[in-house]
Length: 493
Image 1 (cartoon, rainbow, N blue to C red):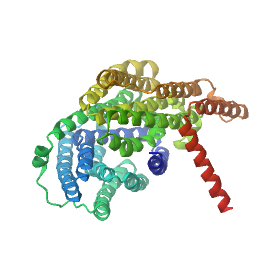
Image 2 (cartoon, helix red, strand yellow):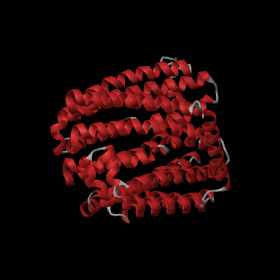
Image 3 (cartoon, rainbow, N blue to C red):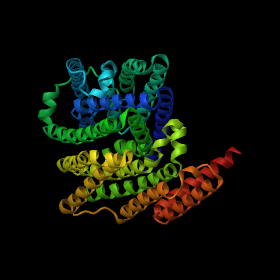
Image 4 (spheres, one colour):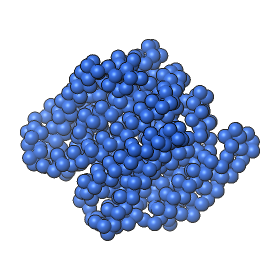
C-alpha cells in the first residue's frame, strides 16, 4: 500500500502545484470579483457534468475492474460501451443546458444573468470533462494507478495553461474558449494513449449498453445510488457559492473560492489515493474484516498527512492567501482554519463511505451522504448570515459529522465493526490542533520574529504529540525512508 500511495501522492503534489499556479494567476488577473464570477461558472459547469453523467464514469470503474479479470476483450468491450454511453449523455447535457440558458437567461440567478454568454461557452467543456474521468478510471481499473494519476496531471496541466493564456488574451471569455478547445485536444490525446498503453479502442465492437445491463443488472441500481450521493455533494457545493454570492456579492464569492481552493488543496493529495488505490482495493473480492482493516490503516495514514498540512495553513492564513492568491484576499484569513477542518473531516469520513461501497452497502452510502448534505442545506442560510464565510465551513462540517455518525451506526449494526480507536484519536487530535492553530495566534504577528517563533514552537509540539500515536510499523517505515534518503545523499556527494 505504502509504495503505491507514495507514487500517486508524488504525482498529486504536482497536480496541486498546477492548480495553485492556475488559481494564483487567475486571481491576480481577474481580482476577487472576477475570480468569484469565474469560480461560480466553473462550479456550475462541474455540477452540470456531475448531474448529467449519472455517475457512469465511477460506475464504470467498478465494472471495468471486474471485466479486467475476465481478459482483455471483455475489458475493452466494457470500456467502449461506457465511452459511447457517456459521449451521448454529454452531448444531450450540453444541448439541454444551452436551451435552458437561451429560454431563461436568469436560470442561475438574476445576479449571474449578465454572464449568460460565458455560461454558454463554458458548458461546451462538459463532454471533455466527463470523458476524462472515464479515461483515468479505465487505467485505475487495469491496476495502473500511477499511470491514471499521471494522465490526469497532464490533462490538468494543459487545461491550466490554456486558462491562463485565455484570460491574458481576452479575460473571462478567453478563459472558456481556450478551455473548450484544449479539452477537445486532451480527449483525443487520451484516446490515443489508452489505445497505446492498454490496447483498448473506443471503436471496438460491443453488444451495446443494453446487453451490458442484462449481464450486470446491478449496474443501474449501483449507478443511481452513486448518482444520488454525488448529486447531493455537487448541489451542496453549488448552493454554497450561490448563498454566499447572494449574501456577500461577487467579492464574497471570490473570497469563498480562495478558501475552498486552499482547503481542497490540503485534501488533494488524499483524494486520488482514495479514488485510484483504496476504492478499487476494497471493491475486490476480499473478506469483510480485511476491507475494514484496510480502511482503518488508510484513514490513519492520511489523517497524519492532513494534520501536518492543515496546521501549517492554519498558522499562516494571511501569508498563504497572499502567496497563493493576492493581498486582496487576506480578508478571508479568519475563516481559513474552519475550511481546512471541513476538508480534513471530508477526507476521513469519505474513507468509510467508500468502505460501505466496497461492502456492497451502496444504498446506505447514498442515504448517509444525502442526509448530511440536507442538514447542510438547511444550515447554510442561518450560519452564513450569522458567521459570514465561516458559516459556510461550519455547515459543510456538520454535514460530514452527520454522515460519519450514520456510517458508524451502520458499520456496528450490519457488519459488527467499529472504527479503530487509533483513527478516532488521531482525527480528534488533528482537528483540535488545526482549530487552535487558527485561533491562538494574532494574525498581525505572522511574519514578526516573535510570531514565527511561537508558531514554530506550536508546530514542533504538534509533531511530537502526533509521533506518539505512530505504530511500530509506521515508525519502521519512516525510519526506512529516512535511511534510504541519507544513503542517496551520501552517494551523490
